[in-house]
Amino acid sequence: MDKKKTLNEILSNYQSLEMELIDNGGELTGNLEEKLFLNDLDLNNKLNGYEKFVRYLKHQSEYLKSMESHYNKRRKVIDNSILKCKNSMINAMKMTNQDKVKTEDFNFSVGKSKKWSLDESNLTDDMRYDLIKNGLAENNFKPFISEIKNQYKDKEIPDWIEILENEFLRVS
Image (tube, rainbow, N blue to C red; front, side, top):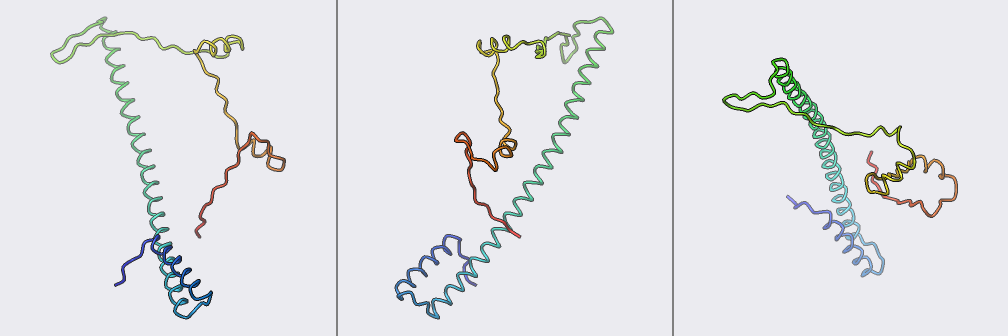
């Protein structure tokens, strides 16, 4: 059984065939045609193998995404159960008018914490500016690329827009 060639070996064979063609003065001999045909078969088989592997990896990625979703839902249920249990313990201690309870295994005490938030509708532009200037907030600029693309697609592109082209492989 023939050893399977790597993609680099197949590409190297094309370069060798090119050199052989040059050495023959550009004449495509029967021997060269046969080597070219065999290398083409190797390339076709290799591309098929790569695509099958890519599809396998895509399936694995989708499977892992579904498992992430499954475990995230499961974790949220557990987190909610923890909160409910703790709230039940707090309510039981409040109902019995106890701030502290000592058991054989644990010490329980009810505490209070404060959570701060901003009502941004009450902030003036000057207040926003002062918060940003004093390092207490940041001003986030988020361009909407798809809207910009629609706005400028049939116009001259300003120099502040970068368009990067990427090659992709279409497989059907």
